[in-house]
Image (cartoon, rainbow, N blue to C red; front, top):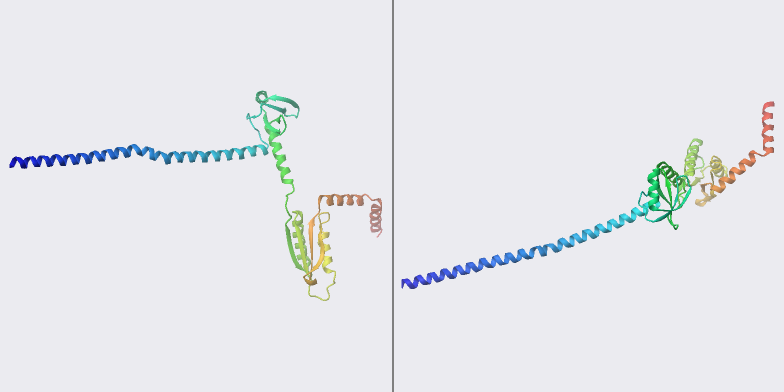
Length: 279
């Protein structure tokens, strides 16, 4: 009886150990498979991230290169040794035509004379380049900058506006006239509205006299863009002043020179001076 009981205990122990061994082996196999698959699954997002980053960087680089190339085409600057064409047409620093040259010969000439190379006419075939000194490039940049500043701005002219009464004092009128002059010099249009004062003794042509008085302070500079006309049911008069165009300025100067050189005008001036002396 004791032997049978002992054998059953031994069998139960062996069965329990086998179950524990299977569970341990199962966990080990599952962990091993998970570790084996982990680099594969983890590498997928990492690879896609790298591909995305590389593609994004490539787009940025291409945009940067296009922007840099565009600036180089429009900017007057030294291109260094990066001559993309094999044969180019070259002018020296004095403007002499050196003809077509191989880029290797141009680079050697740059080193010998300590010169820079700038684009002159890149659209020709072969493209034209010019050798220049550093000071020549600096002076040319300054000249182009001044020419760009002097170029008239495109677009509609801005309009300033002034409104005052016809019974304005002389001091206030002088102040407003100076303001109008400053705007006209800056090529603004100036809309001036003069309201008629409620004074029965005021002459009817008072507003026109004020407009003419303002305009006479700017001879050879301003003129009427639209002449004085009544507004607000006749209670005010409005006009627009503008700067003279280039043709109008030339015509005005020619007129003044003609009047200054007219012998009759000089004779009248001399007569006036003699009359003053006799008095």
